[in-house]
Every structure is written in structure tokens, then in C-alpha cells.
Image 1 (spheres, one colour):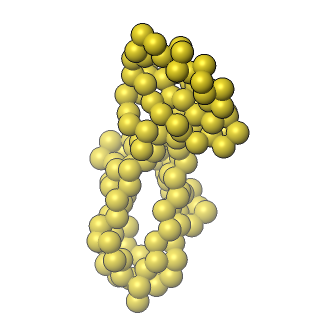
Image 2: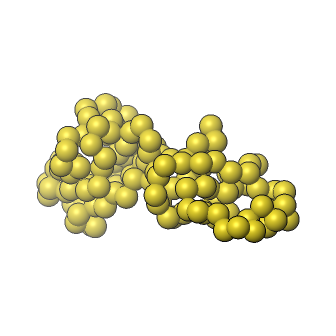
Length: 131
């Protein structure tokens, strides 16, 4: 797969899985683009160009319930196995194969979960926990 992007803004313009025969002529009309090749087979919504000009996959995390309350268990799903998990700046460990982070916030406030994993874009999820 080839990802074409603006080298200044890193904004993805388009993705090509296999170039059509006249593609070189088309690219000649777009000198504002550069490209990177990747083995990832994803849509443009699932990837991002990283500052080092490589392709990173987005982490598709979901929170259940969507409205979190103190004293009630919350679950964040979709975390890649092996991802480092940081909760409010403190390292909590590494995600297991389940991809589920379950926690029960004791008090109301804003919590920040950071997920870092090789091959994925660093993601931060801010949660407002209600009383």
C-alpha cells in the first residue's frame, strides 16, 4: 500500500493499494505530495503519517459506559496487546491479549489514559468522572 501525503503538514491525501497504469502521469501533476510504502492494509481513517515520515495505525479505543461515574467500573476496549498503559502520568503496565482495561475510579475528576505501542500512534483518552 502507498500512502501519499503533504510533507509539510503530514496530512494524508490518498492511499493506493495498487497503482493504475497512468499513475505516474497523475503524480506529475501533484508535486506537493510525497509517499511512503507500508504493509498495513488499512483505510486512510485508520492511519496517520508520523513525524519520522512512517505510517502509524490509530488505536480505536472505546469507553463503556460512555458516561463514567465514581465508584462504578469502566472499561476501555480496543487497546493493542503489548501497549504500555499510563494512567494520570503513572505507568500501570502492559496490555494483555484481552485488549480490555477495566478500572473503578474512586473519586470524581478528570483522568488521562495514555496508550503507547510500537506500530501505533500514541493515543490519549481524557475521561471526566462524575460524582
